[in-house]
Every structure is written in C-alpha cells, then in structure tokens.
Image: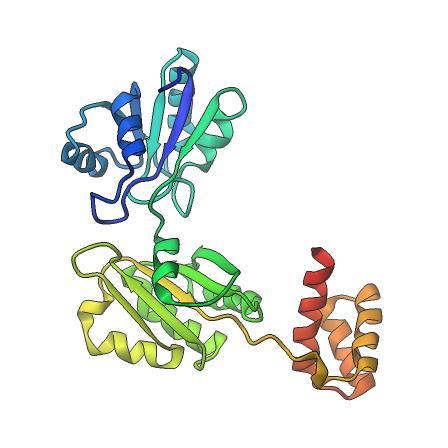
Amino acid sequence: MIQKSTLYVVATPIGNLRDISLRALDVLMAVDVIAAEDTRNSRNLLVHHSITKKMIALHQHNERVASKKVLDLLEAGRSVAYITDVGTPGISDPGAILVNLARKKYSVVPIPGANAALCALSAAGISTAHFLFYGFLPASKSTRRRKLEEIKSSPYVLVFYEAPHRILGCIEDLSEVLGADREITIGRELTKLFETIHTCALGDALAWLNADTNQQRGEFVLIVSGAEVPDKSRISNQAEHTLKLLLKELPLKQAVKLASDITKENKNQLYKIALLLKEDEGN
C-alpha cells in the first residue's frame, strides 16, 4: 500500500523494458507524482506499461531546485516516486541529494531492481567475495591515469562504467596502468538487442574493440581482475617488522623506501604489503 508523504526510490530497467519488478509497477501506478531524470525518456517506459502519471524533471543540473518541489509535495501529503533513465537512482546517477534531503523528515522507501554493475558481474564468471565499484572514471586522460594509479594495487575486482566516446582511451589507460596481463570482462549494451559480454586479457581488449567498430557503441561495464595479493613469505619477518614500525611514524611511501634501504628487500613488494597493513589497520 502506498503511504502518504513518502518518497519511493524506484529502480528501472537498464535496457529490456520487461526487466522491471511487479512491485515497481505497483508503485509507479499508485503514487501521486513521478519525478524522473528525463521525463521524455521515462515516459516511454510508462507508456509501455500503460501508466499515465504527472511527472516532474529532476536531474543532475537541477537536483537541488527540483528536490525542493518534491519536498513540497511530500509536505502536502503526496506520494512521489523517483526514477532515473536506467537502473537504480543514486548509483552513478542523480538521486542522492534528493534522498538525503527527504529522509530528514519523510519516509524513503527503496524499490530494488536492475543494476548494470551487478548484471555484468553475474555474467562475468569471476569467483570473488569482494569487488570495488568505481563507476565512471574521469574524462581527462591525466586525471584518469592518476586515479587508476591510486587503486592499481587493490586486490579486489574493479568495476567501472564507461561511455562509448571514451571507451578506447579508457581501455588503453587500464592496460598501461593496471597491467596488460590482467583479465577484463567487457559488458556492452546489457539486456539490449546487441548485448555483448567478452572476456580477454587487458592487453588484448583494445585490438578486440578495434576489430569491429560496432563493439565501440553503447554503454559499457568494465570488470577488471584485482591486483595479485603479495606473498608475505617473499620478504623476511624482520623486513615486515621494520616496515610496521616505520609505518607508525612515517607516511607510507617514505616508510617503504626507508624499509627497503634498511633491509635491502624489494621496494615494490614492500609497498604492496604496506597497503595491506594499512587496510588491516583501517578495518
């Protein structure tokens, strides 16, 4: 049953219009107003399911202003559903600002559903208990490479979103920064007519995309295997002990360099272990 003064955050299909839950349809049919990232795009979904409803636009460029309109509706006792163009609101999409403002005074109810990252992961065949969802990398090449340097040592599977006009540059940077030997699964146009799921070495991905320009079209999910977890047995107990002591007093890079100078152990290996020690400390 729909409740008054309640915001419903509704996930919508990422491609195939039939990938919507019965509960989501019930909510969209019953609420007083639907706020949408793009009313024209969302109207196609509503028409497909024979839903006619008053709509207001709420996107990244007007989210704060439009959120005030939604809050006014909630104050008046109306029920509102928020949907984005595809997938789950607030996940690399608008919605977080609206939800943050609304939940201070009103009920916010999530209606789960499609998500491109989880869709791709389920079909990638990667056995892992942990993954890092990054979303969209920066458009600037230099900034993108810098961000990749920050996460290159993460042992977790990395999940990115990417747009068609940036896919080649992104793949090139992933290969050069993370390493050509890592495995990548490319999910393209998921749940749509030309859906493609391809797995290969990162170093081979660019050639695969260039071999058929049609594979450069559409929206992408990129799943990259995590960094190899360093084997602590490859350094001495004394070196690890020294590193731990230095990390208590010095920044990570400085501690690693000094530990390498003192113990003569491989600096790259010490750096990877230092990251794990910092992570364990944080947990």
